[in-house]
Image (cartoon, rainbow, N blue to C red):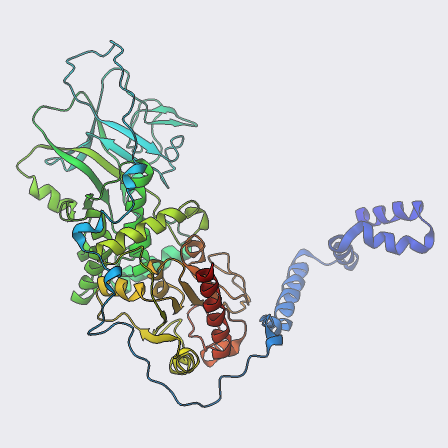
Length: 577
């Protein structure tokens, strides 16, 4: 109070008396004025806290009715969709007898030849000059490694990926071994605090100078997200009550052995990659873009791309599946999206246990090249996807070609595909929406629907190859649509968070009362598909006026028709150019 009054009196002395009040307000500012008022009331700290909390709650309650913004296109006066009209039965987009045009198909034998040569990304032969300082027999072989990512902090495993040459697997010890020269070995890391490090594996209490204070490996083999206490409690509840396995990260590091590789070993040619299933292998979005795609990306970024990749998994679908249905779904995703990376020439996908069993008669199995680590996250932070735009398109081409679809072919006519989904984030008035689109565009496009049930991945890819516009709920249901043709449109239905008195938005930079796109962090970097958003702003946009992230949405068909018409217009102008 004295400080505020002192400032006010100082200003008062320098200005005419009639303006002292104005200068008092300007000098103290809003916050200082509030503090001055509280000081004059001589309230205790407890009363101030109670008063502040009461004011905060009152403001939230008073603004409760204003939390939903007015729809920005209100002046267009979209008509209500409550008018009764005869419903039209939509056909399935893909069913018995469906087939692609000949120019849209490929056989697996010529699939690779039809794609751009991705080996152009591969590294050239490295420098090899003899210095005359190497001791020992020249035929001695050692392990080597090359990494991208942070090499200055033993704790920064995220986004670090490496290719190892002549690293080996000790079948008896069930451990990977890196054979390093006993003299002048190459440092592994240059840690900011610990200096040069010559080990890939760190365990608490180990190391003479200084002792290690934490357990760390070298790279992640699947997606890792730093979890807060609420997320950890939820994971424990799912594990204890629902029987779901903990979505724990899997890390990897080889132990270092001083000396050359023993003569009694087998060396596997080609490129091998080792990874682990992600947090939710039964969700297509996570299985494709946080499991299969990172393996493809790591090969390209490290310059060792091959269409004949050999993949070893830390565990298989049996770890995450509770019944035969889930087992089949997991295997379907693995075969459909990881299978294209192994091609016709790579070895059969196997787990580490199966790999060890296959070589149980051997002591040491070495790899010509072994890829580990990578950028596995896709949906939690947009920074994880910066620079991936072109690689997403390349992965699309590889998957489509593997499933017999020519990635360079374009549809000859329009097809509007609607995704029918029950449950969370579905479309409440789906039949009404389908009927309206059929009446509006039935003469110029094939208006159809799919729920993806019973379709193989190859059939899904063929169905997408004929689609020019897809209308889908956001979330996992939308994450197959990066495989749409070049220049196609996707219209994603948004969601919205309700106002909360106690808790703020938890993820994705969401805001209350905002129309939000799920997985926008990923979709912002899918360059070959045009994105449109069906936005939501009012409780009336949701089923039973219940606003939440998972609520089903009621579509205004007039607004949706306007979006589709603009997409048609854009595609028509592209053709005319």
